[in-house]
Image 1 (spheres, helix red, strand yellow):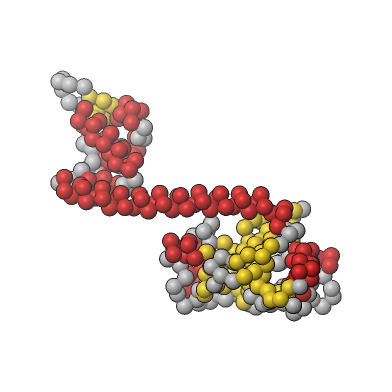
Image 2: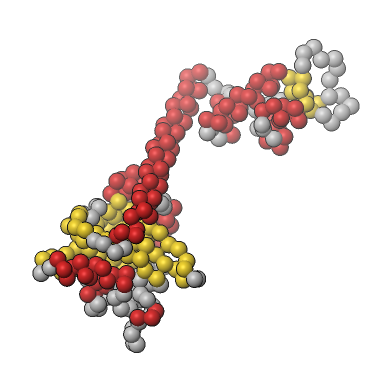
Length: 290
């Protein structure tokens, strides 16, 4: 390379200065972002001050969240074109920040649910249920085999924790009569609108309704205790009313209320106790006066 008229830096040096590893710097060279020089009779690559400045700018663009292809474009645009690319990234970043804020709100609510679980798994109160949308993947049998439904289920699952596991129960879960179980996913109206969910042939709307609100702490499938299970019960789907619903049944009796079908449950916490799954769920129980 001959005598240097101003400083050059080895690739390892600029990697250490900028925090960009050598493999990435070489990738930048392959993309045409950087242009290093090889010293005569040596395998070392050198970069001058202008290239170091360009690497710093590349690092800045990457920290903005631009892709590597975006960086190549940003370094080959007019000021007007550069401005347009920044405007697009600004909109994308604003959307990302709003989602992160909503995710933080989700975490705060999850912590509230955990703090309240001891109380509401033994107490009930009257309130209105949230407006929601639901999507079933089990209704007496798995609802699979349809590629469109399976793709939609996958999309909903991708949106957890805004989307939560959901079950729809009958009044028999409270009264001890015949029970029907439907299982799927649910999302509140506010999050459905944010995520663009609920406008498809498989989803359904769950309007807000006056309800008995409580929580259930259940082992096994929908809170059926093995030691209380009578002979002849379908072990795959239904079993007896157990202590997960006993406090709701007592609340109905003491307040002259009759539970109705269309109970909505939403599981917000699961844990293993001695190898057995236990689920904690919200319950919104529609009712009528006795």
